[in-house]
Length: 135
Image (cartoon, rainbow, N blue to C red; front, side):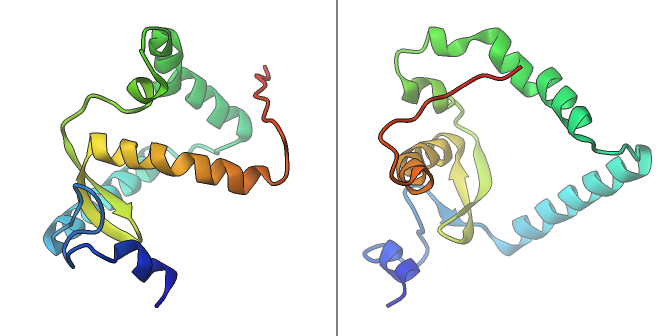
């Protein structure tokens, strides 16, 4: 039995994770075409060289700037309340190596559940983690 088989043990063949169902092939094709058209359009309209400075400027001026400006984490009752959006929408996402339809809430709940193991894996044998903000 492979490691990926053990993750799906006890679940029906059509259910890969809590609240996630395999995405129908036609939805995958439509999403792929939409993403491809968007990328081609972006390339055709603007051939901007993606320098480190350019990426940082776009990053600091876009979605992340709005998140920082809202300071939602100060009003959130918990880390989970801040990190898991109150969004009942459905999205296509890769879960356990399979593209599935999953609610946005369940997707971010799953990502949050996987985060501690990832931090442990990346941190190695350190005793503490320190976050620094560089300007």
